[in-house]
Every structure is written in structure tokens, then in C-alpha cells.
Length: 281
Image (tube, rainbow, N blue to C red):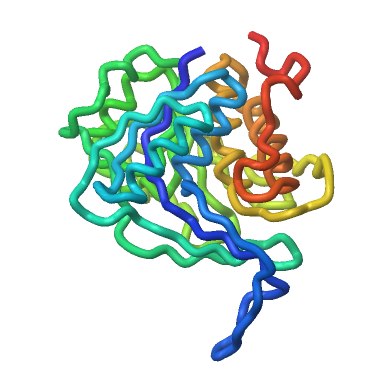
């Protein structure tokens, strides 16, 4: 199975705290760590852990953090093909509170791969599935050469007016910044998946809505950073494996639940070795 991601990276600093500080307050984090993350990177690593490999087409800052991001993501099992930009690598600061919720501040502009970048776009042709988190219309059109194309609503500007029809658009039913309204993306996606966190989510196809429940967490909740992106990676993998969208959503939901039980986005992502027949054709 060939699955790829077209998307972005943020170099993130993680700080576990009792609570997110109020205005003027100082909170103490007993520890902290940093690593490359962001929606594109997290979904790509999840896909690699299910499919055995993942091509990640991205753009990075041509600075120490940008080059370190590429090396660290390759150590996590990705094949990273990056266009390096003269801008600084985008960064993020993540508070992880005692309830396992994450609060994020991003620093700098999102660096997006473009269709004009010297990247191996031709390798997307005939791929089983591609997930898009960032890019321009050229990147969207290159992604459409795959059998299945999934995108986050955060990448809607790449598809609006591109003439590309998405197989699945992933959005949020509760987060206003990641919501979807009919007409946001034209042509309209064939299916829209609206996530509701611990309450599951809604599948919209052909004007009909079906709710799905969230699976139980396989362990105590540690932090929610990366759970939604792991969901999207699992969903994309399921579609790439030829499953119906309902089955692909179930796989994605398992991935999101597993991610929430680990430290950071990669600590407990679901691997193929943990599945029974989920990924078999």
C-alpha cells in the first residue's frame, strides 16, 4: 500500500502543566521536550506505523530547526521530501494540562509545499491514498492523481477553485476554527467527516448524516495533542487499504484514542502490529 501526506511541520515545545496560566500568571512545568510535530507530520508518522512507510512532501525553513525537523522525522520512519524556504521554521508552544488537554500557540507563518516546488509529485500518481494538510492549488491537483484524496479543512484554500474533488474532507463539529459549511470547498467533497472528540463524530454523505461513537481509550488519558491528526492518518490509511468509509473512520478513531494515551503525538500511536485484521484487504 502506498500512502502519502502533503503538508506542514511545526517545531513544537511541549510543557506539561497543572493548568494553562491565566493572564499575568506564571506556572511551573516539571519537565519539557521539543520535537517536530504539526498536522502533516503527525498524520504521516501514524500512516507509516500502519502501512510500514509514508512519503511526506513538505516545506521547511532553511535553518537549524527546519533541517533538524527533516532528520528527526526520518528517524521516526518517514521518507521526507522537503522544499527549504528562506523563512524561519514555524514553531509552536504546547501547554499540556492535568486533564490531558492541549493549548497551542504557533509562531511564524505556516510553510506549505507548492506545486511548483521541485518535489517528486509524480509519485502521487496511482498512490492508494493521499492526505493533505497544507499546500497550494498545484499541490492539490498533484494529490488528485491518487486513488483517494483526504484533506483537513485547514487546507481548504488549496482546493477552493482548484477544480479538484475531494473524496473526504475532515473538519470539526465543535471547533469554530476548523468548522465546515457547504460552499467552503468547491467542488463539494464526496464525504465530510466532522469530529467531536470524545463524543465520536458525524459522517455526511449525499445529504445524510450518520453519527459514530468514539471507542474507549486503551489506557489512561495522558494528553490529546496529535489525537485528531492521528485520526486523520488512520482514516486515510483505511481508505487506502480499500475499506468502506465507515470502516476507515473506525480505524481512525482507534488511532486517535491510542494517541491520547501517550506522551506527545508519537508516544502511543497505533501500529500495525497492534491490529488484527483491520488493515487486511
